[in-house]
Amino acid sequence: FEEGLEMVERIEFRKEDPAFGWMSLFSPHRCVYKGIEAPTAEHLYCSLRVFPSKLKEHKLWVEKIISAKTPQEARALVKDIPPSILQPDWEYYRQELMKSVLSIKLRTNPHLIYALLATGDRKLVEVNTWHENFWGICTCTTCKSTGKNTLGTLWQSLRLSLTNALPVTGSHFV
Image 1 (cartoon, helix red, strand yellow):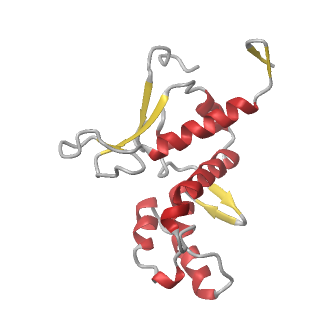
Image 2: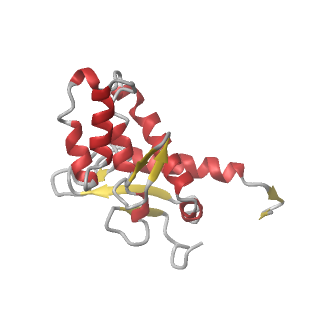
């Protein structure tokens, strides 16, 4: 475990956080998936909004999102995609796809697996001030720390899967 984490029951993360900012979709950790090399998890997640197709227009949108200079720019581009090109049933699949993106982030950056395991069994909470109450918890005075914290819950689920996959002997890892 990292020093200073012994008594903390909850870890709050945000992109600016030097200790846990790697859990943010905006952290500068590239993600490689099916030949696509995205500079951040946000870039990859946004590119998955485009319905998979061999059509040139679809590929151009994916390339445009992946080559966006910032994760914020990648996210903003999604609003410009014609509805006919977007993934149908996005609301139904978005959590599953996000979990896949987080897994890809870990596979592409294996050192983050150790960082995730080092969080122990603490609750992981994505905090923000821009009213994102589905993926995180907004701490602004209007929202007053409300939100679903879906991103934190998905990280916890991945951590549990990794922990369960580790070989153990008695109470010690092999």
